[in-house]
Length: 119
Image 1 (cartoon, rainbow, N blue to C red):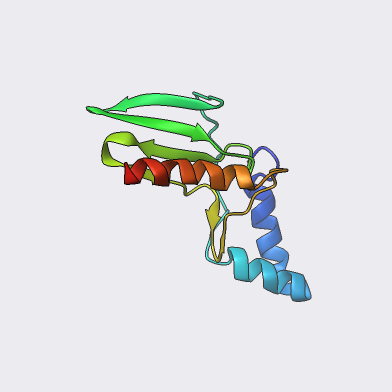
Image 2: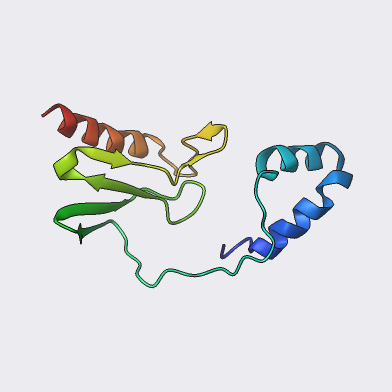
């Protein structure tokens, strides 16, 4: 949201029907979303690397894996449940986008959790 505010995306979507193939692509990717009237809310807590948190009686670990499509992509790991959720780097019809100079780092991190899952 720091780079492309919702108001700009709303303007693109309004113009998309008259933009030929580019507009068709925008409608395909973002047509299901309404960007009008969104007021951005920035985080009140930030971290880099890893940040453990308590949620009820469970430990939840936030793990920085970006940049992928933003600079704040995060993996959520719940060790007691042996669950890792990576939703920040998944988007409609496209998975695992990364601008990292070494995409293998993301896969290595996910492999670390699969290994723990087998233990």
